Image 1 (cartoon, rainbow, N blue to C red):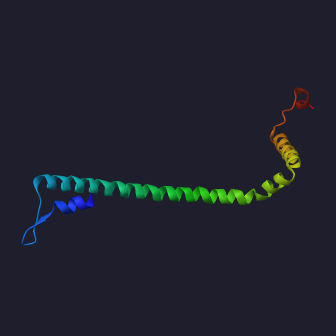
Image 2: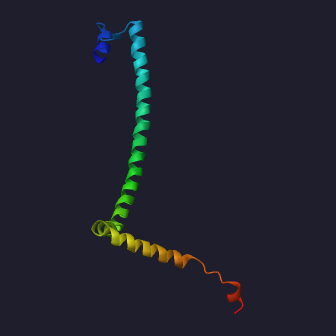
Image 3: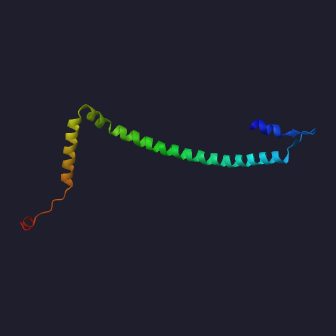
Length: 110
């Protein structure tokens, strides 16, 4: 494509460039497409930079969560049944503590 464009040009004795009307149309259309492409590239580069910033946030969150749960994951790999049992006990006790105790009518009057 570049060589075709170069071959369109005819230089005069004074160094001026001459193009046929058809060649001028071709070069003009390519120039317009280039301007549009530059704009699109700029938009895409901005979106890519935004996406990279977003992915960095999630990467840091993942690293933080991974560090916080490292001991749990290691314990689960070494003793999965004991960890499942311990976790079930903790969750059951937590749920029992959070469940409000509603006194019966007999207990209300004593």
